[in-house]
Amino acid sequence: MNEKISAWLDGELDNDMADWVLDQVEKQDPMHETCQLYQLIGDSMRGEGATKSDFMSRFDAKLALEPTPIASKRVSKSIGQKVKSHWYSAAASVAALGMVGLMAYQTGRNQPSELIVQGPATVAQQQGMNDYLVVHQQMSGNFSGHDGVMLATMPLDNSTNKAPKK
Amino acid sequence: MRWLCIALICTPAFAAEVLSNADASMLLKRFAGAAKQLDYEGVYLYQRGGVIDSYQIVHIKDQKGEGEKRESLDGPPKLMLRENDHITMYLPDAKKLDLDKSAVNKLFPGLIPDNPQALLDVYYFVRQPNERVAGIDANAVVMEPKDQFRYSYKLWYDNKTGLLLKAAMFHPQRGILEQFTFTQLQIDEKLDRKDLKPSLSDKDFEKYASLNSPIDPPPQHNLEIKGLPAGFKVVKQSSRRMHGKSEPVSHWLISDGLSTVSIFAEPLSANQKPREGMSSKDGVSMGSKGIANLQITVMGEVPDTLVQQIINSVIPK
Image (cartoon, rainbow over all chains, first blue to last red; front, side, top):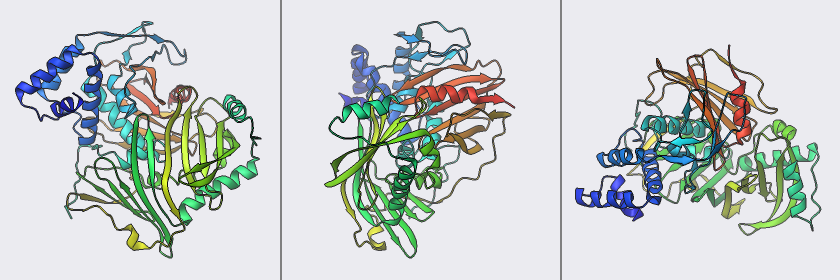
């Protein structure tokens, strides 16, 4: 099933098969997380974070209608009220991408003690955080920079700056 | 100190020795020097969470200086060639790669900075029992942080040459967050420049050559960083245009020589509320707050206590 989800997110399935995959995803909650992860991995590796297929948009729209309560607790009073979320037990691959993908930042200073995530973070939020993370890792070196140097292919600005093929 | 206690308790049959600053300094300089001065060829694994990737590395040092090749063995082919400070990346589909060459020079096994003084001030160095790594009887040392602002590290090394064989970063509750380990290694092989020739066919690659430290303008926003935890300092600052952002983003890179944290500042649009909060997952911590009309974001593979401390250190000028 994971292979079909991956192919679906890559736009490699015909409409009938894509509808079937969407139905399966809707029936099985754990697949929501798989979809999110595959989408983030694919987007980040292709540098297509802002591009979403029709099916992914439909999926997001449906997922957004399913509030997910996340227990949270205050960790500090130093920068106003903060929440520390208890995250999904996401597969730890690309941990940071998973984090920003499922991240739900609160706005404003009056935070409830329990955070309600209305579906995934917006595409703009995901992309923005992913871009930040890529910049961070590409500049870091040492431990955290290894992925940034050896794996990142995400464009960091609006230019592609392609060199001619050898 | 908590980790120091754990290290001592976990090795009852071994007389754990806390190294003096002089011994620790000598050891760290050996690590840094060996990665640059030796000829070696091997395969190492990089593990982060549930993902493991393997890379081949060839490193030579001759009269021309350093030559290095890193080639991914899993997933999409990636290749990095380095001649001293001249770096060439080969990728399946070249995009704008804004790598900092000083970061590239600090990849495994060259993780340790040339000047380790900052690390000596903030970590205890505790000798550990020998273990076999890549068929080599490796010495080991644990770096225990003296405060709550950084993770612990364990380093395994070849006592004969000082080359790092394995390095792991530990979360206090979750255990290993990231690790590098050689699975095959030949040290002091008679290697030469022809060994740097890529094994991959280059027909599907586009070359992105001559990476240099990007020369970006300094941060444009009226912010300053004050009161960083001991050992941390701003090592790079810039203003950069980013994908999807209409305004330049200010970026500060904070480091103690091993751990790094980034601060980003971008203007909020009219009527946009700032994000405020802290999050951490799998060792990555992230925090946000608003200052005037700016959104501040702090992130890094560090404890959330450090991100909190750093986000509080960002103040208006």
